[in-house]
View 1 (cartoon, helix red, strand yellow):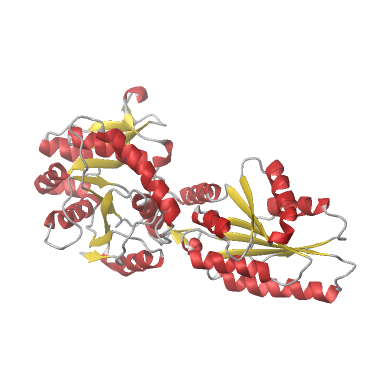
View 2: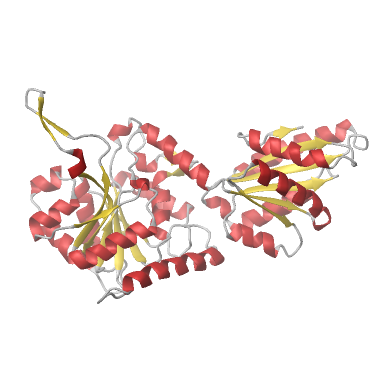
Length: 441
């Protein structure tokens, strides 16, 4: 078994360890566990997770295995690991990958600063990969991680939107029943064809369910099932709950899952994942300016709130201490508007970018910064405006390497005309979707 880079404290999201949000997430997790602890006989559990990630993505129709396909330039499996890492009571995460992708997986762990990850070599089938992961947990060697858990979660590397409440529900049910799994209503009717390709019979859709992930098991139950498993089941089986029933007589408790548990299977699913992630990181905008120009940022804040009523908008001063702004960064806002009044340089924008880089916020998701410059067209010569345009283009290319998308907006207005400023910025923010170093005037 190979371990990922060592880490100490759990980040709320893998990568930057944002302490404020970490405490909030742990408090939320604690409240969920306290609810479970209220059940008779409930105690703190040792929980681990196994992710089979050795598939080749045949149905995807692309040369790259789907778990490594990029979403916003970040591999899909990284989002799934992030979802599990946010659950601090999952102590170990074992990922089974093919030998040829072992180095790729190591680089993903290092680049995105994933924690508590161990790697094992995948088998030639899904069940064999899971069995290899369970074997790694069963070794339970002294001073060796991961250690044998009481409960093991089995999840798919290509289901990135699993939530903690679903994980807790299946773990709690597995503790009581020995096995548990998430289910969803069937979308399509299931039919059985005859040997000659004609309809043999159909299943009543209302009486059946689709088996989803995650699933959870008492470790000794599922490990024993895999040890007894026939070669045929290891080669052709796909359902872990069925193995627990067949080989250990353990009837799994079925837990209703959320609509977000779907599996990325086809190429079109990658676009759906990207769209969902973009929506999640576009729910907040922070308007930043110097203390002396806060009236401008407040004006813009009100305009944005009226135009983008589904987005949270805040404004903060870019003072030297920057405590309020740092808190917003800790809370993981990914969209910023930096207002520069009556100046064509990028001093204020550079301050903001420095803070963002120090926070490591852009490790996981792209950060969008709109650098707005208000210039009085009666006072600023055209040559100075053109110089600003060229500077920000070069600046944007540089910060793009650090996953920060910089857009420049140059607004020429007489100093007396304050009100149109906010509307002009709002139009730019709302209409410009391609922020790759664009400058508009």
